[in-house]
Image 1 (cartoon, rainbow, N blue to C red):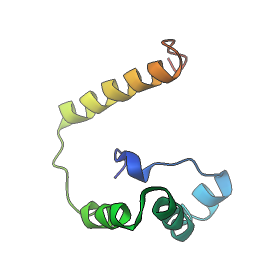
Image 2: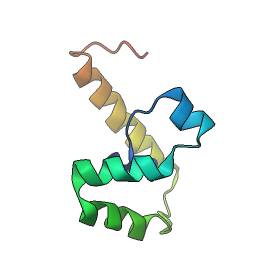
Image 3: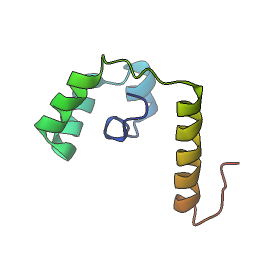
Amino acid sequence: MYFNELNVAPQCYHCNINLSGNTQIFREKLIQKYGESAVEELDRIRHISTGWKRWDYMEKIEHYKTEVKKLNGGLDKAA
């Protein structure tokens, strides 16, 4: 679920750390944003093992590096 973009959203420190994600509110916000069916799909797939190998993760790393560069206007400020 870490790489499912529907399941990623910013949270304040208190909700994320102190309340362990504040899952009930997080779920409600996901439903507001994406709809009930999308959240039900996340529930369905959350226990399915990806079976990913090292190269799958390396591919994701490269993908998100590219996305960060796009967001930074082509400048990789994260590096």
